[in-house]
Length: 300
Image (cartoon, rainbow, N blue to C red; front, side, top):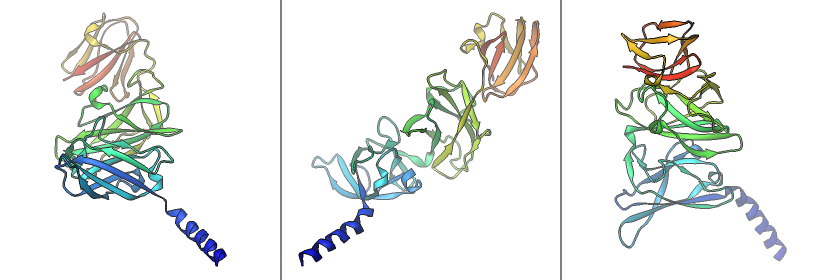
């Protein structure tokens, strides 16, 4: 009989060993409705419901929990919390998204301090090579400008060979309107925006209806090199650089003038000594390299 019980116990352990689960406990403001969801790479960015557990004794917070998340949730997962499907997303410090617990743990506690109207946001996630130390998002809606803190992405996940950076883009126009964009990066501590996405070589396109967009850039290229010095404002140039009738005018060039757009595309390059006038250009930010010194110039 004891032998039969022992065998039965072994069979039960074998049957249940493949069903290890992860528990996520989420503390939210008491104003949160009794519906809470988690979404991330572990479930294809779909909404998995969490279950209401209790309200704190002082009435300021609520607790939601789920013990049915897969064990693979632990370790290098990026996820968002929602108060209703694709409607209200977390804004807890330091960023909109969370990173899951270390591999080997079976539970994690998360606190959400506030909610935002996620229907007006697109959450952009990009997987890049591990060497990327900073990543920035630019587009036709946030502006084709040199990266600033406003367009800097948040590092959310680090693996052995890749990193994931995230950006919460607030839609100021029709939420369903598609936009084009790309990513700029600094590599291994080099200058910010020195590198632009190479693979894929073209801009990505938001399909217009998703709240979470996932992209991958497998390679970056130097877009302003060779540049001997850091970028300066055109007003600081000793050669005097100015805009006249949507053309960039350079006085007293010694050897050459080269113009790039902010995406790193070559617009015009000439070997010249003396004055130079570019072709008519569209509004936007340009990099003007004069005698191997680089300057920023804006055309309104």
